Each structure stands twice: as C-alpha cells, then as structure tokens.
Length: 335
Image 1 (tube, rainbow, N blue to C red):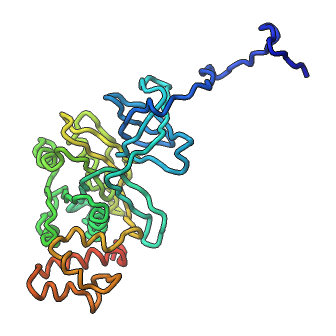
Image 2 (cartoon, one colour):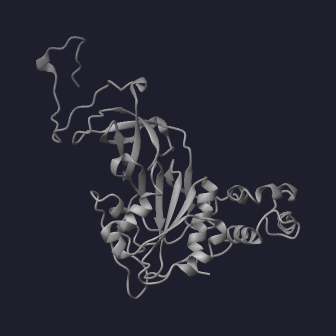
Image 3 (cartoon, helix red, strand yellow):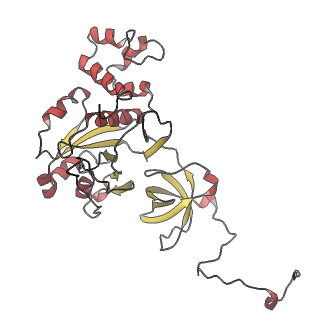
C-alpha cells in the first residue's frame, strides 16, 4: 500500500470518479446563529417543504434534533442552502415551541400519539349531510380533540342540497359551536367559500373530516390557484376515497390566513385526552368542578356539576353535552 507524505505531488494523488455527478461534500457547516425562521408547509418521506421569506425551500431534519420531528404548521429554524433552487437541500436545526398541538391516536387503546398539525388556532370539522351519511360520533371526537388542544371548533356542513342541516345542528346547539352550511351550487358560484372564509381571516385553520365529505373541494374553492385532487364516494360502501395523502398548509388569498388540508380520517382515537382539559372549553361549568372529588370523570354520582346545574348556574343541556363528549372516549364511532 502506497503512503503519501505531507506534501505529495498532485500527480501522485488518485481522484475517485463521481458517477452521480453531484457536488462533493464539504466540511464547512452552516452556523446555527445564521438560522432563518420558516413555516413547515408539508412533509413527504423525510423531506419538508418550508416557506422562508416568501419562497419555498426543501429541507431535512438535522441529526442534532434526534427523534424530535417537525409537522405541518411548525415554526422551524433552518440553515444551509435557502435559495429554493432545484436539487438544493437545507437543514432544520430547531423546532420552535408550539402554541397548540392537535393530536390523535389510531384507536382509543393505542398509546402512540400522532401529531396532526401544530400551531393551529381553529379546527374546521367538515361533514357531509348525505353521501356519505354524517357520523356524529366522529364529530364528537373531533370536538373533544379540539377542546383538548385549545383550538376553537368550526362546523362546516356540506351537501345541503341532498339533506337538511337542521337535525344535525340541533344536537350541537347547546355547545354554541359556530357553523357554516354549504352546497354544490354555492361552492360553484363562490358564495359558500366567502361565508367560510369569513371565519378563517387572521387564523390558521386545520380542516379535518371523513373521506368523501367534500373537504378538499372546499379547500380548492377557498384557494382557487391550488387545485388539489378530489375523489368520489363509493356507491356500495358509502365511503369516500382518500385523495389527499399528506397535510398541506395553504395561504388564503391576500395572506389573510392559512388553511391546512389534512388526509381524510376513518377514526379519531382519544387515548391521549385528559378529561380535565375538555372541561376548560365550558366556562359556565368550570367553576362547578371545584367541589368534585379528585380525578372526577364528571359523570359519576359524586360529581359536583349535578348540584351546580340544579342550583341554576348553568343550562342542563350544557352538562349533557359535556358528558356526551367525554363519553366518546369509551364509545366506538360506529355505535
């Protein structure tokens, strides 16, 4: 084996060919103090698309982050090539503290939490009034997840040309959840999009819903220049087909807010939910929990909320709604 001295002649050094034609690695690492803040728009197989100073940059997670991951909606610190040019890759070195985290589990007995989106402040629960039939248990579960994460819920009911919205809205009246009712014609002429957009201004809103309810169709109406693929409902099973495969954050026209389109869900597990956090969304009932026994489930004989309502401090319908939502953790969505 030939050994080279400290000052070998250039002709004596063997240069290995680079068949891939890519740039050689460099030992020069970007400095963390040069990091720039970005917003994660989407995640695809380990590559994250970030919005940095008005341009999209592809990045990957730096080794120093370890097992910590970044999701859509995260504010991150990015170093490296930030030009956004083709075949360039930056590095995410830090995930900034989150203001909110919407989580779900695959099922109620699954301890593994999946973060849906970060830093959203509103959850739009999109439900079709028909084709497919509405699933109230799934709506309840999404409401519980929203209250647990500190997000304001918004009900968006689609396909009102196929069925009336009244019966479904009656069951959520006591919760005081804002809602918008839409149909195909109103989406086509832009009227429905304007009514929904009025609830989105100045907010980051995550859209969730069962497959086939028209969620992506609505997002396309809200952000006309980003036509995401839409599917149809299977006539035999009554279920929609997944067309959105990854969450994507999109700016509303005029930078008036953000919408995050998420893949259709078939279940929304609540293994991670702490019932005491759900009660925080009921300010009229919260003072009544001071007399509850420790670790009260708020649906047991010694619960102080019964007396609180009996004394006229809150509407009985509100207590019923709270207990119905808390019970969703023990109830299957198809029950």
